[in-house]
Length: 143
Image (cartoon, rainbow, N blue to C red; front, side):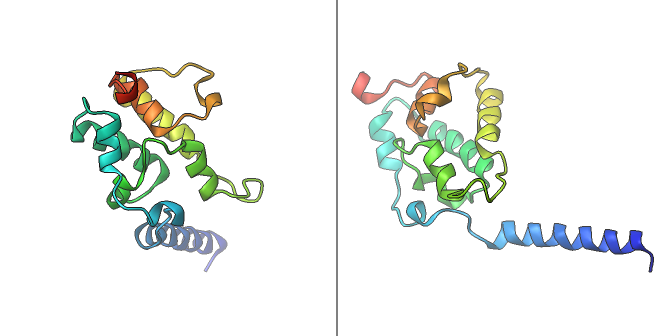
């Protein structure tokens, strides 16, 4: 066999390993996995929002971070996106990330047709802050 064939086999093996890891390895940090359903928190914070609106928003977050759909309601409106990121990458200098935060912003902007202000991320927004910004659903405490 020539070197090109070995490289092709190696790349194929890496792709299969990546697919299997995505299917079988649960990336959700323990802190969130141990939680009960946060659906009630979302409904209390955003009573004008439908369950479908909340789920659609959280699905974008799950897609960006490659979390399983079954974990959708493990996240609270009070969770900061950067804290979730830091749970995944406690030592970012040692582990290259998968651009989860950037992907989340891109998915949000595309789905909701909004553009975040440049300084939006500096305040370390919560999922609730982002949901309110993109949907215009009033926060119960501000209503």
